[in-house]
Length: 545
Image 1: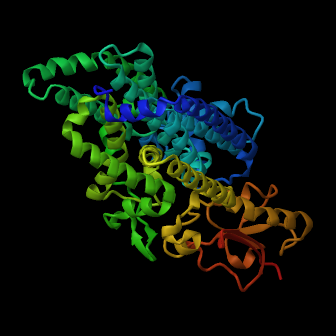
Image 2 (image 1 turned 45 degrees about the vertical axis):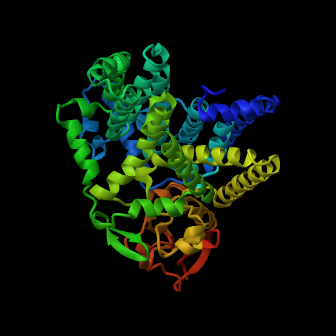
Image 3 (image 1 turned 180 degrees about the vertical axis):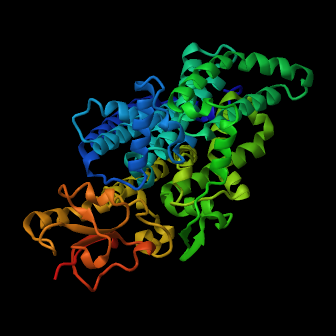
């Protein structure tokens, strides 16, 4: 075993008693079971999720993209619709097409599609970790991320950031396969990279950076494999990445299909980047108990958010991964990256961490928590799983009892996260960890239900009251909504209107956020108070005397 890498030695020692292969088989079976359970859960619960703030316009954008092709480019309104043409419409166009045939209503279909797309994303996590670290680490990554409330909840209600996060996972998978394949990159790998990168570009322009990161990982591997071969680097680099050029036309073609505006002018991609960095959203954000303008948030906004919205088990895993990587670099130096697998891990790490660093330096306009950077969460979970696995292996070299204890702690931590996610359902995305003091500690300090997902639940008692009651004027029901009107009216009987003034309103339905602090708590009877973990997310109030 003297010629093996240190990691291979530890696995070889563990395999001597035949116990490790059996664990791998059971880890694979359990992973498949988890993926099946996630699919079943998505299909059973997708109707529970409310309509969030952006979903109406995103749905319209998808319909306009579909009309662009249905009219053979005669209807070009998608290319100028609000500011959404700065983004690709992969999910929205797909949903608009499926909605032509689905038996469900428009938004239920979108939520089901989002949930099933999330399952495919979790499958990508499993495949990526099987490739990089084996079956047991893949199982751990899948279990940890499937019970991460922030990630799971966004999958159903976020038609832009969640699909982009899952597509980023798949780009990482095929990028890592390309790194591990060597010069003879398989055709399936090239095609997979082209498809996933194209769909990611057809969602957000930021995906172009993933291609740059992949080329950088190849360059690091080439240089570290032959540190003194300066003259040979260009030729070796060209040989290694030559097969990947075939992925480029596939990616650009798919980008053009799902984001047609991007190819209507040569400068459009640059314009989209500028829009992402300096988004014209002039409003304030609740941050650490104060209202701060979105374009003037502190440099540590994203790092602090990650610290309080990632589950504690992920944070612990990231600490372990950092220590493990520091140890490896101390022992092997940069020569570590002569190994292709190490460069594959580096590729994933760069995509996970570089945007966080760039955000701290550039300080772009940010709002709505960290949803614009949701794509880093799966990759941070992947790195955390690697760190936790290495920690368990270290304990195992001391005694099997310590291994059992470590696995038991991890199992309890995952079970706790699953319980919290179930407790928050269907508002998992509002999760905060113990460092923030759970939801009670976050209330009044950080944004909670900024997208209004809980308004659907608050609207149901109003619908019942309307069915059995009489409006103030005896003719027309009117509701004051503090939130997106569609998030409430969609669940009420036909003909209900939004009130122009509070005096004419029969009901008030609103979020428990700073913008809704003038809720008429003393002027009516509370008929619904939607609470999660001791915090009120939204209310419905009967204003009739």
